[in-house]
Amino acid sequence: MDAWCDTELVYNPAVFRETRPEVLEAAMAKYPLATLVTIGSKGLDATHLPLLYRRAGAGRAFLRGHFSRANSQWKDYTAASEALAIFGGPQHYVTPGWYASTRENGKVVPTYNYVTVHVRGQLAFFEDADWLRENVTALTESQEASSESPWRVSDAPAEFIEMQLKGIVGVELAVSHIEGKWKLSQNRIAADHEGVVHGLEKLDSEVAREMARIMKGEKSI
Image (cartoon, rainbow, N blue to C red):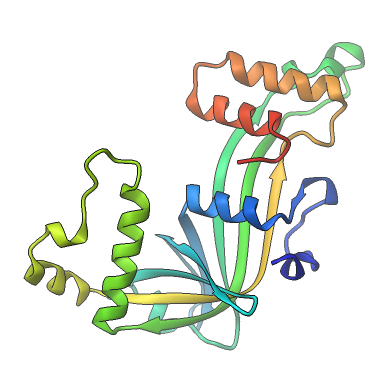
C-alpha cells in the first residue's frame, strides 16, 4: 500500500499525511460510508454508499459495494477516468479559545480537525446474483459483528432476498492510489495541541471525545 501513497493527489502537507496500511484500513472499516465520485457524460456525479476494503494478493486491493439499479451513475460512468472514493472519519471545529497562543500573541484563526481517506481506481460493475449476495452478506456481517444478536441475510425469506438483489448492481473499485489525511493540530505548538485536546474533552459530545482520543493517540483511529 505504501507505494500508492508516494504521489500527493489531494492537498496534504507532510505533517498531516497518513500512510500506514493498518491505520488506513482501520479507518475505512470503522467509517465505511464513502462518497463515490465519478465523471460521466453529464459531468461529475456522486453517491454515498458503504464500501468494503479487500486485499487480493500480489499488492492488489479492491473496494466493493453496490448501487441501486435505478441510480444512473453506474450507467453513465466512463472508464476513461478513475473514480474517487472519499471516506470521512471524525471531524470537529477547533476554536482559537483553546490555544495557548491566543493568550500569548492573538495570532490565531479557527480551523477544523478531521480524518479522511481518499481512494482512486477504475470501476467495474456486476449483476451476477452470487456476486451480489456475497457482497451484501459481507457488508451485513461487518456491521452486525458488534451486535449481541446479529441479523443475517439468511434470516430474511430467500425469495425476498432474491427480489432485492435484482434491484442492485455491484461495484468494484480496483485501488490504484490510496492516501490518508489526519489533520490533528500537528502543525501547532505543543501547548496549542494540548489545549485542543483539553477543550474537546470538556465538551459533552461523543464526536469531540473521539477526536480527542485520536489526537492523543498520535494518528491512531
